[in-house]
Length: 627
Image (cartoon, rainbow, N blue to C red; front, top):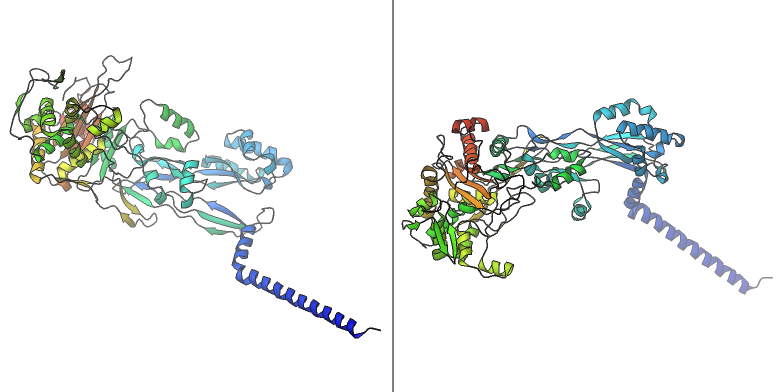
């Protein structure tokens, strides 16, 4: 017989069990609600990722055009990458298929085995075997597809540089992203398989040129086998088209005028800062970096003693030599340090501190010269005297910086040097030596420690042309939509440096530069019937270049900086800065080169036509040193 106490205990147990069941169902219902409603999107997304295979479709990089935007100077060429999905290859046929594929691709089976080790041979993940595969090879593979299960291919365009030679330093080249680049660019959407710009415009504007990758999504089973016939495709978007300020015809003209002489030349529009041409010799072919031998070719370039990878227009600084007398003259006039009409006698030599400083004409010298004739004849004694006795290094340095020396020119290229403007404080820190009067004399004629790039000298002349303003030099002109060609963005002129020098000083400098052409040392090589030119020569003495095979080794760089037309407003002018390095056979080529460039631009002539029109066709022999 069950007493009432036992019944109560049994009832309590049933009640507790009911409570537990109710709580369980409440918890279960909550979890269902949470997973399906609250976190439903998360789990649906996760489920989709698990059951989807996503294939990336590479985006084509944007094309690059010169300023006329007619034909691209950089395009994308169809190329292919061959992939293998090892799980789709029957186990007993794997070695046979891979051996046949290796023959088609011109590689060894061992190379394929390195990319697909034995533990991956049942995987359905795709492995890229080779890129840069031409269409003819893909055609052969396609014709024999039945014998090549698991083998597929995808389009992988490569860069094709239509204009090589001197354009290589401007445009640059692309390559696989490395670890250092990946560390910096990871948060910007770059991947380990990304192709990135390495130098030049390709690097400077990589984010614009990159484009957006597409995706192809297919449903797969747990083993990675595709089980859907209709994949979802998100097409890629091509990168933006870039229009440069470079004029291909002027670039070719400058390249041919400089010839195979180690050096550089820059042509820019002073009123906007647009770079019309930038040539540095020697140069290289950007297309080699798209070849299978890219690593070998790069090593050759790096080890080449002539350093063809260097863009000498912006990455190398030189003593500006007598071109610096433009800055010296402006400083002297602005500071009223020495009257422009007052004459100084040049005897060809100046003795100071127990040393003999020789003017370039030696004894008996230039005689008595005022400022205009001192610049025209490029008299060192005149500028030594003014620099040492009337200006001093601090004022000289101050005006050099006002002209943009000693700091970046801020051109839109990824690498450039600032040059050097020395001071007494700098020398003390650098060499622990006191600044001497002889140092000031050397800097007064652009020698000694003073250094500048060809682009900085082009900017110096632009400041004279603009009467006190340097516009930021730039190579990008416009960004355009790759499909419609619509202009998305354009680069506007931007002031880089603005001088406080008086307007009448600029007029005197301009007149002196014009007088240098008509009555100075370069009057023959700079004579031009088509256009009036204003210029300044420079001959930079440097350490002798050691070459046991050359006994006629000279140790002078040849400079010429100019603007033209002299009698036109700044917006119609061009500025040119040319250097021919001392390692070349001495022929004082910078003046001739610059005149050929100016003649070609304003007479609309080729280099050959301009050379003939100027009467320079015979210039093939050593001319000896001139100033």
